View 1 (tube, helix red, strand yellow):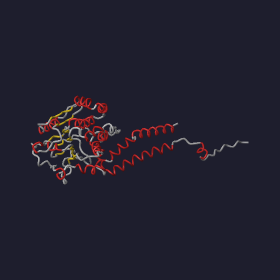
View 2 (cartoon, rainbow, N blue to C red; view 1 turned 180 degrees about the vertical axis):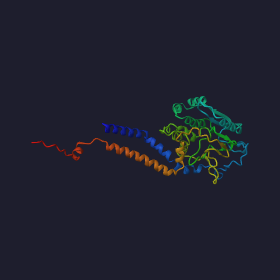
View 3 (cartoon, rainbow, N blue to C red; view 1 turned 30 degrees about the vertical axis):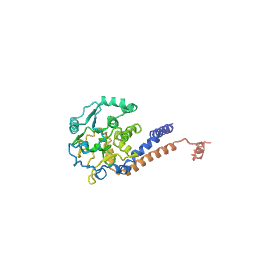
View 4 (cartoon, one colour; view 1 turned 180 degrees about the horizontal axis):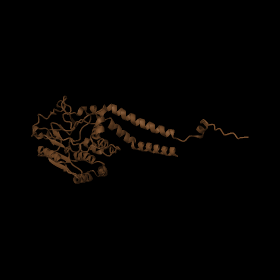
Length: 342
């Protein structure tokens, strides 16, 4: 009876695992895990540079009052600046100060502050087919991330994290259809994105949200990053057949991390306060793994998943009921009976 219960338990575990990792889930997992391997090749033609784009990535050539119109360059991105803050708590004062710095440097831009009320109405009215999913996200930051893509697709402009204090205007970037800063060790950061309205890539970011909406048990950091965060957005980037109008803001060859928004940093565009307030307890673990060789990590994950699957299958096979033929072939045990006294 005990063996039977164990068999049922293992069978249910296997069934649930295969359902959770269905064909579409396995394909999604493959796309997510392959990012470190394909990012360099995928983004090679998208890295913003002086040679390719005639653009000074240090921003030293662009004065504080630089105007795209005055230079004769046709702007592709509207002058709209978006900040998003969801949840019952008020933004910290340093966040409010950081936003004020950005408003000061974008005096002639139309500004938006998306809160619970305005964001809820926006998603319900413009993306009713995504509203139920958006409201059911387990983490607030997932709703914030999804809102980034939605408002950029609808209105265009620039969307910024609340903990980014602007040091200058983003005006020089309006000549490109889409720009985001490079991240480490692969992908790009969604803390700052500049995009034209109704851009095909941003549309793809919105369209794929339901497909990648999966909770990773006991891993809130992975759940956020793989469903709506930087890793998700960078994965969708690698799946685009045409990336000619996408740009990744990196830096000159000798300073490739110039614009990376990791921790407390100063870039030509921002002072990053490095809040990362949404990180779960597993963030340190993921941060540790991301510093390892990504190919070794991939091989390790495949080995672990394969070992677990093989162990479960072996246990199920060992616990199957024995047939009559197997019983007859098993060695018999001789039982000596006591002799009867005469």
